[in-house]
Length: 208
Image 1 (tube, rainbow, N blue to C red):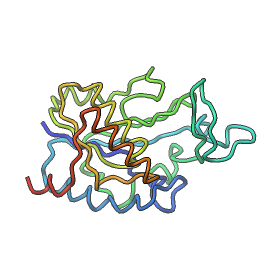
Image 2 (image 1 turned 90 degrees about the vertical axis):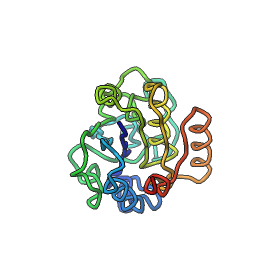
Image 3 (image 1 turned 30 degrees about the horizontal axis):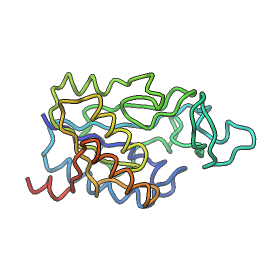
Image 4 (image 1 turned 180 degrees about the vertical axis):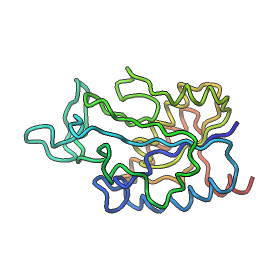
């Protein structure tokens, strides 16, 4: 059972959004080709889904500016611009993304006291989402991960997939993802590879 996990391809992380990833929208046609190819038995996606008072927002801390470093529940925390607030257009999936093909959507980041980069668990690792259980129930044996952003939510999702699904082959689709900073992307790919996540290109998948 092969599954695709699409991380946070939402308006908020695309050009024009509140926390845009450079060229974030350019991965949408690549992901749509992967979906249309029929290489996957299951299409899953994560969706950042923050309450308006989320503690990772700079607006919730007096004197804080976006991208300052602060703390949240005792953990180091980047203070982000308000983004992907529940029910707003910023939180919607990109309009061109083939969401009709989605079998399962995992919303994340709903607890205002902790951030959630990974689709599998909160940053403090105290709360696990339903995604790993769903994939186990579907008897997934291979999981390909892509989306936004490589150096944050994609990386942490791939690493948690490796940790929480030890019997599943995990791959990161490099060209179907975009990151915030070049150095961060390079480091994230190295960290994923070190953890046993394979690095692949969409052409390899489409050619199979």
